Amino acid sequence: MTPQEAATHRPARPALPVRPELAGSAPYGAPQLAVPNLLNVNENPYPPSPQVVADIAAAVAHAAAGLNRYPDREFLDLRGDLADYLAVESGVRVAPEQVWAANGSNEVMLHVLQAFGGPGRTAVSFAPTYSMYPEYARDTHTRWVAGRRTEDFHVDPDEARFLIAREQPSVVLLTSPNNPTGTALDLGTVRAVLDAAAQVPGGCVVVVDEAYAEFRRAGVDSALTLLADHPHLAVSRTMSKAFGLAGARVGYLAASRELVDALRVVRLPYHLSAVTQAVARAALAHRDELMAQVGSLRDERDALVVWLRERGLTVAESDANFVLFGLFEDRHAVWQGLLDRGVLIREVGPEGWLRVSVGTPQETAAFRAALQEVVGL
Image (cartoon, rainbow, N blue to C red; front, side, top):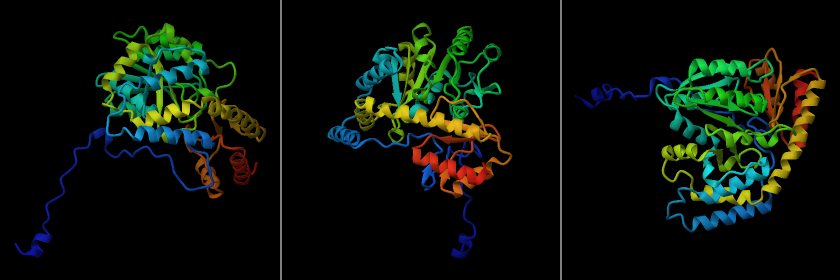
């Protein structure tokens, strides 16, 4: 065969054995665009203070001196610091062994599905809710079933009991405050779900995802208050939002020791790096300073809700650091109009709705001005 003939008869590239359920799927991708006002992924708009930065840098430098060794596999010091924080924030004291942490609450949730989901098992939630939940189920070969929330984005206890009795899930995921709506669940609803889950043969774990719990309004209790009486309950949190540490990727949950021990079985060896542990512990040492920003963000959120409603828009009740608002015949046009004016928000949730994160007063002012121009409020 001549070189010319060889060039025209190259062997076909071998096919990749991609799992059928992944074929054609796109990876998670909230837009990351260079615009002046980033209000689309519910970050804390305030960076750590110079003192927090300095202490984190010092902690990382100390950890770096030992990077030739594997990190503390059980990270009980960090788990103890997280337990201390929860005792202050929610009034609920748990042992360090009742706390689990990973690289973001996403990995914590994946651990839950790895431990309690799997082939032949079902996970249940109530839509609209966090878009990654079905992907956790898919990635762990867990069947996914989504019930529906009410028109005001709450979970009806009777509907929840019915769905759990019908589907017999091994995992129920409740989000409170909910993403993307901001809606918090009352503890009566959580108790109803826990009671229904307790009737599932073989057991059923209920996870209450409280990623935005620090932003909840006065009088809204954390599901942490139910832990002592419900060994099948797990309450997940994150340091990405209220702590302003989205870039550090630290999520955690609190649960019974038995539940946490099951997560320890499925985690990868040394999954939480020494650097991550050092960053998290240094930040937790400044919890009072970091949490002081939460109050101002709550106030900014509540003022934004009032402003939007005064202009005739529909706004979901929010206990988070974001607001879901609408309704728009062409929400993408509104989203694009805001982006053209330097404001990036999120086109997510039910049709007709948009979600905006609470920013600094300057960022929120830019959002208001841009929205008035786009919609003509």
